[in-house]
Length: 428
Image (cartoon, rainbow, N blue to C red; front, top):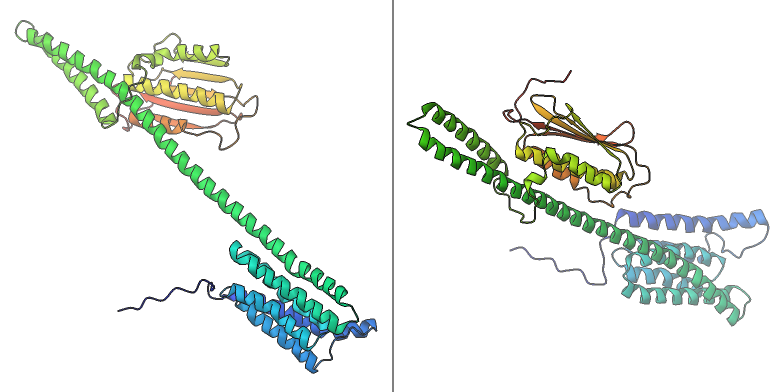
Protein backbone atom coordinates (compact mmCIF):
# COMPACT_ATOMS: atom_id res chain seq x y z
CA UNK A 1 0.00 0.00 0.00
CA UNK A 2 1.54 3.29 -1.13
CA UNK A 3 1.38 6.15 1.28
CA UNK A 4 -0.07 9.37 -0.15
CA UNK A 5 2.22 12.33 0.51
CA UNK A 6 0.60 14.98 2.62
CA UNK A 7 0.03 18.35 0.92
CA UNK A 8 2.43 21.17 1.69
CA UNK A 9 1.28 23.74 4.26
CA UNK A 10 -0.34 26.86 2.77
CA UNK A 11 2.64 28.98 3.86
CA UNK A 12 5.04 26.88 1.85
CA UNK A 13 5.70 27.09 -1.87
CA UNK A 14 7.63 25.02 -4.43
CA UNK A 15 11.06 23.64 -3.67
CA UNK A 16 14.04 25.94 -4.29
CA UNK A 17 15.54 25.92 -7.77
CA UNK A 18 18.95 26.64 -9.19
CA UNK A 19 17.82 30.12 -10.20
CA UNK A 20 17.11 31.00 -6.56
CA UNK A 21 20.63 29.96 -5.53
CA UNK A 22 22.14 31.94 -8.41
CA UNK A 23 20.17 35.07 -7.46
CA UNK A 24 21.21 34.70 -3.81
CA UNK A 25 24.85 34.24 -4.82
CA UNK A 26 24.75 37.35 -7.01
CA UNK A 27 23.34 39.43 -4.16
CA UNK A 28 26.03 38.07 -1.82
CA UNK A 29 28.82 38.84 -4.30
CA UNK A 30 27.58 42.41 -4.83
CA UNK A 31 27.17 43.10 -1.09
CA UNK A 32 30.45 41.42 -0.05
CA UNK A 33 32.27 43.17 -2.90
CA UNK A 34 30.98 46.50 -1.64
CA UNK A 35 32.12 45.63 1.89
CA UNK A 36 35.63 44.82 0.63
CA UNK A 37 35.70 47.94 -1.58
CA UNK A 38 34.96 50.40 1.24
CA UNK A 39 38.58 50.46 2.54
CA UNK A 40 39.85 51.02 -1.00
CA UNK A 41 37.47 53.93 -1.41
CA UNK A 42 38.66 55.40 1.87
CA UNK A 43 42.26 55.25 0.72
CA UNK A 44 41.45 56.75 -2.66
CA UNK A 45 39.32 59.57 -1.26
CA UNK A 46 41.36 60.23 1.84
CA UNK A 47 38.24 60.56 3.96
CA UNK A 48 37.20 57.89 6.49
CA UNK A 49 33.80 56.35 5.77
CA UNK A 50 33.35 54.70 9.14
CA UNK A 51 33.63 51.14 7.84
CA UNK A 52 34.84 48.48 10.28
CA UNK A 53 38.41 47.31 9.61
CA UNK A 54 38.75 43.96 7.89
CA UNK A 55 38.97 41.11 10.37
CA UNK A 56 37.37 43.02 13.23
CA UNK A 57 34.33 41.76 15.13
CA UNK A 58 32.06 44.33 13.45
CA UNK A 59 33.38 43.33 10.04
CA UNK A 60 32.68 39.68 10.70
CA UNK A 61 29.20 40.60 11.97
CA UNK A 62 28.45 42.33 8.68
CA UNK A 63 29.77 39.41 6.66
CA UNK A 64 27.77 36.91 8.74
CA UNK A 65 24.63 39.02 8.17
CA UNK A 66 25.21 38.99 4.42
CA UNK A 67 25.69 35.22 4.42
CA UNK A 68 22.50 34.74 6.43
CA UNK A 69 20.55 36.97 4.02
CA UNK A 70 21.85 34.93 1.08
CA UNK A 71 20.70 31.72 2.76
CA UNK A 72 17.25 33.23 3.32
CA UNK A 73 17.07 34.33 -0.33
CA UNK A 74 17.53 30.73 -1.43
CA UNK A 75 14.31 29.89 0.45
CA UNK A 76 12.24 32.66 -1.15
CA UNK A 77 10.44 30.12 -3.36
CA UNK A 78 9.67 27.47 -0.73
CA UNK A 79 9.10 29.86 2.21
CA UNK A 80 8.37 33.19 0.54
CA UNK A 81 6.72 35.05 3.42
CA UNK A 82 9.08 33.87 6.14
CA UNK A 83 12.21 34.28 4.05
CA UNK A 84 11.29 37.85 2.98
CA UNK A 85 10.69 38.91 6.58
CA UNK A 86 13.95 37.26 7.76
CA UNK A 87 15.95 39.09 5.10
CA UNK A 88 14.66 42.41 6.49
CA UNK A 89 15.01 41.37 10.15
CA UNK A 90 18.72 40.50 9.93
CA UNK A 91 19.82 44.12 9.25
CA UNK A 92 17.95 45.17 12.43
CA UNK A 93 20.06 42.72 14.43
CA UNK A 94 23.21 44.10 12.77
CA UNK A 95 22.15 47.69 13.52
CA UNK A 96 21.82 46.81 17.20
CA UNK A 97 25.12 44.89 17.47
CA UNK A 98 27.40 46.75 15.05
CA UNK A 99 25.97 49.97 13.60
CA UNK A 100 27.99 51.72 10.94
CA UNK A 101 28.44 52.55 7.30
CA UNK A 102 28.71 48.88 6.33
CA UNK A 103 25.02 48.52 7.27
CA UNK A 104 24.19 49.75 3.74
CA UNK A 105 25.51 46.56 2.17
CA UNK A 106 22.49 44.68 3.53
CA UNK A 107 20.10 46.64 1.26
CA UNK A 108 21.06 44.55 -1.78
CA UNK A 109 19.35 41.44 -0.42
CA UNK A 110 16.40 43.48 0.86
CA UNK A 111 15.82 44.98 -2.59
CA UNK A 112 15.74 41.54 -4.22
CA UNK A 113 13.54 40.05 -1.49
CA UNK A 114 10.99 42.84 -1.87
CA UNK A 115 10.85 42.37 -5.64
CA UNK A 116 10.51 38.58 -5.45
CA UNK A 117 7.82 38.85 -2.78
CA UNK A 118 5.85 41.25 -4.97
CA UNK A 119 6.07 38.88 -7.92
CA UNK A 120 5.39 35.55 -6.21
CA UNK A 121 3.00 36.34 -3.36
CA UNK A 122 -0.73 36.67 -3.81
CA UNK A 123 -2.31 40.02 -3.13
CA UNK A 124 -3.94 38.87 0.11
CA UNK A 125 -0.56 37.60 1.41
CA UNK A 126 1.55 40.45 0.04
CA UNK A 127 0.03 43.25 2.12
CA UNK A 128 1.02 41.93 5.59
CA UNK A 129 4.45 40.79 4.36
CA UNK A 130 5.15 44.14 2.70
CA UNK A 131 4.06 45.95 5.84
CA UNK A 132 6.37 43.85 8.01
CA UNK A 133 9.29 44.36 5.61
CA UNK A 134 8.72 48.10 5.51
CA UNK A 135 8.49 48.36 9.34
CA UNK A 136 11.65 46.30 9.86
CA UNK A 137 13.59 48.34 7.28
CA UNK A 138 12.48 51.66 8.80
CA UNK A 139 13.31 50.46 12.30
CA UNK A 140 16.70 49.01 11.30
CA UNK A 141 17.73 52.18 9.46
CA UNK A 142 16.60 54.38 12.35
CA UNK A 143 18.53 52.30 14.91
CA UNK A 144 21.63 52.26 12.71
CA UNK A 145 21.47 56.02 12.16
CA UNK A 146 21.11 56.69 15.87
CA UNK A 147 23.99 54.33 16.70
CA UNK A 148 26.47 55.45 14.02
CA UNK A 149 25.77 59.15 13.44
CA UNK A 150 25.26 62.23 15.53
CA UNK A 151 21.59 62.63 14.63
CA UNK A 152 18.40 63.23 16.54
CA UNK A 153 15.51 60.84 16.77
CA UNK A 154 13.36 62.75 14.29
CA UNK A 155 16.16 62.94 11.77
CA UNK A 156 16.95 59.24 12.16
CA UNK A 157 13.28 58.31 11.80
CA UNK A 158 13.00 60.43 8.68
CA UNK A 159 16.04 58.70 7.24
CA UNK A 160 14.49 55.32 8.10
CA UNK A 161 11.21 56.18 6.36
CA UNK A 162 13.06 57.36 3.27
CA UNK A 163 15.14 54.18 3.22
CA UNK A 164 12.01 52.03 3.60
CA UNK A 165 10.22 53.77 0.73
CA UNK A 166 13.22 53.33 -1.57
CA UNK A 167 14.30 49.83 -0.57
CA UNK A 168 10.83 48.31 -0.17
CA UNK A 169 8.42 50.54 -2.09
CA UNK A 170 10.31 50.83 -5.38
CA UNK A 171 10.91 47.07 -5.86
CA UNK A 172 7.33 46.31 -4.91
CA UNK A 173 6.08 48.85 -7.44
CA UNK A 174 8.21 47.28 -10.18
CA UNK A 175 6.99 43.82 -9.15
CA UNK A 176 3.35 44.91 -9.33
CA UNK A 177 3.93 46.33 -12.81
CA UNK A 178 5.49 43.05 -13.94
CA UNK A 179 2.63 41.03 -12.44
CA UNK A 180 0.03 43.28 -14.06
CA UNK A 181 1.67 42.89 -17.46
CA UNK A 182 1.79 39.12 -17.03
CA UNK A 183 -1.87 39.01 -16.10
CA UNK A 184 -2.78 41.23 -19.04
CA UNK A 185 -0.80 38.99 -21.40
CA UNK A 186 -2.45 35.87 -19.97
CA UNK A 187 -5.90 37.43 -20.32
CA UNK A 188 -5.08 38.41 -23.91
CA UNK A 189 -3.96 34.87 -24.73
CA UNK A 190 -7.15 33.47 -23.22
CA UNK A 191 -9.19 35.94 -25.24
CA UNK A 192 -7.38 34.90 -28.42
CA UNK A 193 -8.01 31.25 -27.59
CA UNK A 194 -11.71 31.98 -27.07
CA UNK A 195 -11.82 33.89 -30.36
CA UNK A 196 -10.16 31.00 -32.18
CA UNK A 197 -12.69 28.58 -30.73
CA UNK A 198 -15.51 30.90 -31.70
CA UNK A 199 -14.11 31.19 -35.21
CA UNK A 200 -13.83 27.40 -35.48
CA UNK A 201 -17.46 27.13 -34.41
CA UNK A 202 -18.45 29.72 -37.01
CA UNK A 203 -16.52 27.81 -39.66
CA UNK A 204 -18.40 24.65 -38.72
CA UNK A 205 -21.72 26.50 -38.90
CA UNK A 206 -20.80 28.02 -42.26
CA UNK A 207 -19.81 24.63 -43.67
CA UNK A 208 -23.04 23.10 -42.39
CA UNK A 209 -25.05 25.91 -43.98
CA UNK A 210 -23.32 25.41 -47.32
CA UNK A 211 -23.90 21.67 -47.19
CA UNK A 212 -27.57 22.03 -46.37
CA UNK A 213 -28.00 24.57 -49.19
CA UNK A 214 -26.47 22.11 -51.68
CA UNK A 215 -28.63 19.31 -50.23
CA UNK A 216 -31.72 21.42 -50.92
CA UNK A 217 -30.61 21.88 -54.54
CA UNK A 218 -29.93 18.16 -54.84
CA UNK A 219 -33.55 17.50 -53.88
CA UNK A 220 -34.66 19.45 -56.95
CA UNK A 221 -32.18 17.57 -59.14
CA UNK A 222 -33.32 14.17 -57.86
CA UNK A 223 -37.00 15.11 -58.32
CA UNK A 224 -36.30 16.18 -61.89
CA UNK A 225 -34.47 12.95 -62.74
CA UNK A 226 -37.03 10.68 -61.09
CA UNK A 227 -39.96 12.34 -62.83
CA UNK A 228 -38.16 11.89 -66.15
CA UNK A 229 -37.48 8.25 -65.36
CA UNK A 230 -41.17 7.72 -64.53
CA UNK A 231 -42.29 9.21 -67.84
CA UNK A 232 -39.72 7.18 -69.82
CA UNK A 233 -40.79 3.98 -68.05
CA UNK A 234 -44.43 4.69 -68.90
CA UNK A 235 -43.54 5.21 -72.56
CA UNK A 236 -41.35 2.11 -72.55
CA UNK A 237 -44.27 -0.02 -71.40
CA UNK A 238 -46.35 1.07 -74.40
CA UNK A 239 -43.48 0.71 -76.89
CA UNK A 240 -42.28 -2.83 -76.10
CA UNK A 241 -44.54 -4.61 -78.63
CA UNK A 242 -45.38 -2.05 -81.36
CA UNK A 243 -41.99 -0.22 -81.49
CA UNK A 244 -39.06 -2.31 -80.17
CA UNK A 245 -36.39 0.14 -81.37
CA UNK A 246 -38.10 3.05 -79.65
CA UNK A 247 -38.37 0.91 -76.51
CA UNK A 248 -34.64 0.25 -76.59
CA UNK A 249 -33.96 3.99 -76.88
CA UNK A 250 -36.24 4.65 -73.92
CA UNK A 251 -34.38 2.00 -71.90
CA UNK A 252 -31.06 3.70 -72.68
CA UNK A 253 -32.50 7.05 -71.60
CA UNK A 254 -33.73 5.51 -68.34
CA UNK A 255 -30.27 4.09 -67.66
CA UNK A 256 -28.64 7.48 -68.28
CA UNK A 257 -31.11 9.25 -65.99
CA UNK A 258 -30.66 6.63 -63.28
CA UNK A 259 -26.87 6.86 -63.48
CA UNK A 260 -26.97 10.64 -63.20
CA UNK A 261 -29.23 10.74 -60.17
CA UNK A 262 -27.29 7.97 -58.39
CA UNK A 263 -24.02 9.83 -58.99
CA UNK A 264 -25.40 13.02 -57.45
CA UNK A 265 -27.00 11.16 -54.56
CA UNK A 266 -23.73 9.44 -53.68
CA UNK A 267 -21.95 12.81 -53.55
CA UNK A 268 -24.37 14.43 -51.13
CA UNK A 269 -25.94 11.55 -49.21
CA UNK A 270 -26.39 12.29 -45.55
CA UNK A 271 -26.52 16.08 -45.81
CA UNK A 272 -29.38 17.91 -44.11
CA UNK A 273 -31.79 20.08 -46.00
CA UNK A 274 -32.15 23.85 -45.66
CA UNK A 275 -35.73 24.93 -46.26
CA UNK A 276 -34.64 28.52 -47.01
CA UNK A 277 -32.24 27.72 -49.87
CA UNK A 278 -32.89 29.29 -53.28
CA UNK A 279 -34.11 27.15 -56.21
CA UNK A 280 -31.42 25.59 -58.38
CA UNK A 281 -32.74 27.19 -61.57
CA UNK A 282 -31.83 30.61 -60.20
CA UNK A 283 -28.20 29.55 -59.71
CA UNK A 284 -26.86 28.16 -62.99
CA UNK A 285 -24.19 29.25 -65.45
CA UNK A 286 -26.89 30.78 -67.65
CA UNK A 287 -27.79 33.18 -64.81
CA UNK A 288 -24.23 34.50 -64.39
CA UNK A 289 -25.10 37.49 -66.58
CA UNK A 290 -28.00 38.35 -64.28
CA UNK A 291 -25.70 38.00 -61.24
CA UNK A 292 -23.14 40.34 -62.81
CA UNK A 293 -25.85 42.85 -63.73
CA UNK A 294 -27.08 42.87 -60.13
CA UNK A 295 -23.57 43.58 -58.88
CA UNK A 296 -23.17 46.34 -61.47
CA UNK A 297 -26.43 47.91 -60.36
CA UNK A 298 -24.96 48.07 -56.86
CA UNK A 299 -22.05 50.14 -58.21
CA UNK A 300 -19.40 47.48 -58.84
CA UNK A 301 -17.18 47.57 -61.93
CA UNK A 302 -17.47 44.01 -63.28
CA UNK A 303 -16.77 42.68 -66.75
CA UNK A 304 -18.19 39.43 -68.15
CA UNK A 305 -16.64 37.48 -71.02
CA UNK A 306 -18.07 34.21 -72.39
CA UNK A 307 -16.10 32.21 -74.96
CA UNK A 308 -17.19 31.26 -77.54
CA UNK A 309 -19.28 34.39 -77.83
CA UNK A 310 -23.00 33.78 -77.56
CA UNK A 311 -22.59 30.15 -76.47
CA UNK A 312 -24.50 28.55 -73.62
CA UNK A 313 -21.83 28.10 -70.89
CA UNK A 314 -23.89 25.45 -69.13
CA UNK A 315 -24.24 23.11 -72.10
CA UNK A 316 -23.34 19.51 -71.20
CA UNK A 317 -22.60 20.60 -67.60
CA UNK A 318 -24.56 18.93 -64.85
CA UNK A 319 -27.06 20.97 -62.86
CA UNK A 320 -25.13 20.43 -59.64
CA UNK A 321 -21.86 21.48 -61.27
CA UNK A 322 -23.57 24.62 -62.61
CA UNK A 323 -24.68 25.40 -59.08
CA UNK A 324 -21.07 25.10 -57.91
CA UNK A 325 -19.90 27.46 -60.67
CA UNK A 326 -22.59 30.00 -59.87
CA UNK A 327 -21.83 29.97 -56.17
CA UNK A 328 -18.09 30.28 -56.85
CA UNK A 329 -18.64 33.45 -58.91
CA UNK A 330 -21.07 34.80 -56.33
CA UNK A 331 -18.67 34.21 -53.45
CA UNK A 332 -15.64 35.55 -55.35
CA UNK A 333 -17.42 38.81 -56.19
CA UNK A 334 -18.54 39.15 -52.57
CA UNK A 335 -14.98 38.56 -51.34
CA UNK A 336 -13.66 41.13 -53.82
CA UNK A 337 -16.15 43.71 -52.55
CA UNK A 338 -14.96 43.14 -48.97
CA UNK A 339 -11.22 42.67 -49.40
CA UNK A 340 -10.64 44.85 -52.49
CA UNK A 341 -13.07 47.77 -52.25
CA UNK A 342 -13.69 49.65 -55.53
CA UNK A 343 -11.37 47.30 -57.45
CA UNK A 344 -12.22 46.28 -61.02
CA UNK A 345 -13.39 42.68 -61.41
CA UNK A 346 -13.50 40.40 -64.43
CA UNK A 347 -15.51 37.18 -64.86
CA UNK A 348 -14.33 34.94 -67.70
CA UNK A 349 -16.17 31.77 -68.76
CA UNK A 350 -14.23 29.57 -71.20
CA UNK A 351 -16.51 26.88 -72.67
CA UNK A 352 -14.35 26.03 -75.71
CA UNK A 353 -13.02 22.77 -74.29
CA UNK A 354 -14.98 19.56 -74.82
CA UNK A 355 -13.95 18.27 -71.40
CA UNK A 356 -14.47 21.15 -69.04
CA UNK A 357 -15.76 24.68 -68.54
CA UNK A 358 -13.27 27.04 -66.93
CA UNK A 359 -14.53 29.97 -64.85
CA UNK A 360 -12.07 32.63 -63.74
CA UNK A 361 -12.85 35.56 -61.43
CA UNK A 362 -10.07 38.15 -61.12
CA UNK A 363 -10.06 41.41 -59.20
CA UNK A 364 -7.46 44.14 -59.37
CA UNK A 365 -5.59 45.98 -56.63
CA UNK A 366 -7.98 47.56 -54.09
CA UNK A 367 -8.58 51.27 -54.67
CA UNK A 368 -8.86 51.89 -50.93
CA UNK A 369 -7.78 50.00 -47.79
CA UNK A 370 -9.70 46.83 -47.02
CA UNK A 371 -10.51 45.34 -43.60
CA UNK A 372 -7.78 44.74 -41.05
CA UNK A 373 -6.46 41.14 -40.67
CA UNK A 374 -8.75 39.10 -38.44
CA UNK A 375 -11.83 41.27 -39.15
CA UNK A 376 -13.38 38.79 -41.60
CA UNK A 377 -14.31 35.17 -41.16
CA UNK A 378 -12.60 33.62 -44.19
CA UNK A 379 -15.37 31.01 -44.71
CA UNK A 380 -15.89 31.61 -48.45
CA UNK A 381 -12.85 29.70 -49.68
CA UNK A 382 -13.74 26.77 -47.44
CA UNK A 383 -17.20 26.57 -49.00
CA UNK A 384 -15.74 26.85 -52.51
CA UNK A 385 -13.31 24.01 -51.87
CA UNK A 386 -16.02 21.73 -50.50
CA UNK A 387 -18.46 22.40 -53.34
CA UNK A 388 -15.72 21.83 -55.94
CA UNK A 389 -14.82 18.48 -54.38
CA UNK A 390 -18.48 17.42 -54.43
CA UNK A 391 -18.65 17.61 -58.22
CA UNK A 392 -15.06 16.60 -58.98
CA UNK A 393 -14.08 20.10 -60.12
CA UNK A 394 -10.65 21.68 -59.82
CA UNK A 395 -10.25 24.87 -57.79
CA UNK A 396 -7.23 27.19 -57.62
CA UNK A 397 -6.93 30.59 -56.00
CA UNK A 398 -4.25 33.02 -54.94
CA UNK A 399 -2.83 36.53 -55.41
CA UNK A 400 -1.97 37.90 -58.82
CA UNK A 401 1.20 39.67 -59.93
CA UNK A 402 -0.75 42.91 -60.21
CA UNK A 403 -1.67 42.85 -56.51
CA UNK A 404 -5.18 41.45 -56.91
CA UNK A 405 -6.75 38.03 -56.40
CA UNK A 406 -7.73 35.25 -58.78
CA UNK A 407 -10.05 32.24 -58.41
CA UNK A 408 -10.19 29.54 -61.12
CA UNK A 409 -12.75 26.71 -61.27
CA UNK A 410 -12.68 23.86 -63.81
CA UNK A 411 -16.11 22.18 -64.10
CA UNK A 412 -16.20 18.75 -65.81
CA UNK A 413 -18.71 18.22 -68.56
CA UNK A 414 -21.16 15.30 -68.51
CA UNK A 415 -19.43 12.07 -69.48
CA UNK A 416 -16.04 13.18 -68.08
CA UNK A 417 -15.17 11.05 -65.05
CA UNK A 418 -13.78 13.26 -62.22
CA UNK A 419 -10.27 12.32 -61.20
CA UNK A 420 -9.58 10.28 -64.37
CA UNK A 421 -6.79 11.57 -66.68
CA UNK A 422 -8.23 13.27 -69.71
CA UNK A 423 -6.67 14.53 -72.87
CA UNK A 424 -6.40 18.28 -72.58
CA UNK A 425 -8.20 20.21 -75.30
CA UNK A 426 -6.83 23.67 -75.17
CA UNK A 427 -8.57 26.10 -77.48
CA UNK A 428 -6.52 27.43 -80.35
